[in-house]
Length: 229
Image (tube, rainbow, N blue to C red; front, side, top):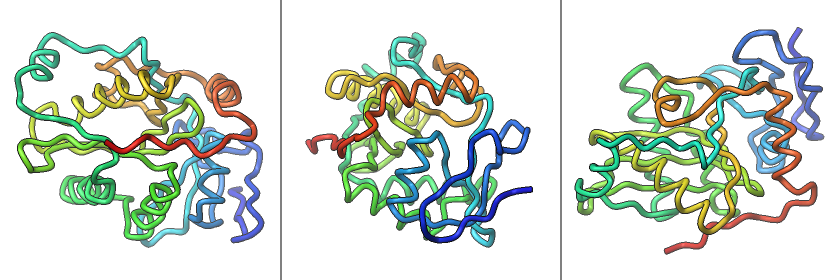
């Protein structure tokens, strides 16, 4: 049985209660306020649900992650990074990135990035926890990604790509930037995709993942703000 959560207080069930499926459905209900989202990410939980569904909370086992030192940049991508003319910025257009992620997924297969999700993560961005990478071709936004940063962990949520490899460029620039300025230890990719595996991401167990969260997110963490440029 899935536990139903009241809007308050913030209280998640033990992770062992997650259903024994790869996606690891843990609970339903609660809210999308910063208190709920911060508590969820610290515990290795994230929201994922269709627009007409209740809020659903997940803790996958296994979990796909990318260690910065394992990032794989193939020769063709390295060439595109040098010669494509595309440039990357950080936290310059968060709402545009999440809106593009929603629009691209809606066009392909439907999206969980509803207006409620957009509003919740824009609020997290305004509080200094939500961050984006934007990839530009001239003044046109052609790729990007967004997620949540706590301590030394970046929790990736979604990415989009209008030009070939533009989402890969976003990921490479994210790892470079966070490694240089914030001692990045881990990028959470949530669930397995061949796209991310090709760039060096790997699967680890839920227990391993949550042990890493305890190591890299201080128990009394402060806001982690990526400086604007």
